[in-house]
Length: 203
Length: 203
Image (cartoon, rainbow over all chains, first blue to last red):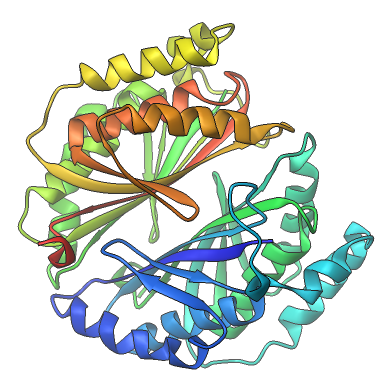
């Protein structure tokens, strides 16, 4: 199994370099458990979903605590057949999900969001979940949407994606649960996700 | 068939509202052929791939001609089973792709990129193509990657995505061909795409 993300932070300010560089310090606690490589478009993070979603959440929360409008785009992937197996991506939650029914997985996902620690930063997110390599991919996507509607972070459905809003702790836990618990445990699942904070459009 | 995109423009300047509002004028020629709706996170564009990719290209080219670093994220989708049929999305290229072999589709895609008009703006792109709802989804993705490597806009492969670089005309034609000619004509295909221009990291 190979799990990771391509992450890009976009501060809408002429001081964008400073905001990016200071926010990247939020990744320091995760440099032992994730492989992190930056180029001119995005930062690759490879590792298990526990540190991976915590790192992405803390990076965005750090930028969102600054006054400027900031967005982040993340391309998440697990189980891509074109990527090598990597032991740092090993995930007990995925292994245990084998054999659980859809309703059991929905209940566990809801519990994880309910018990997520709050960070004190409100974020907006929209994302799409893609379950690849199987005929009936929409069953798992509709099952995930049912979980989202009960998650406490659901804002509304849009064409091609779902909007979430709430504390960064609950919102990024919602994303982690969507990524982990829907689609086959050994399957190829991806997420296309955008986060936004301090937007003048929502004031 | 339902075809469309969620599009977000991110100018890395304190004048981001002005850059966004002035660039949105590039969409005016497409308002008759596309349905365009904006909220606080993204702009929905629904319609056939010809005006859709032209509109996204012209929006980004307009922003990229201004001096500031700017990025754009686009979530593209065709054939999602959860969306209604819409006559404005009708596409002859998709209909004609039925029954063409992979190598015929690759040749037509390469020809389209070769004959694309240049806009005089160099852009960087990275994107992922997802073919959903079928068992052997990687065959079409590997077929698309072969096309990309012969397109003249290929820069390099990255984990989870492919990097393109070149004139906006050729690069957005490459994206349109990837979206149209790979995966079943009536299937569910999505793209997760990021464009970047004027980045201080590439100077």
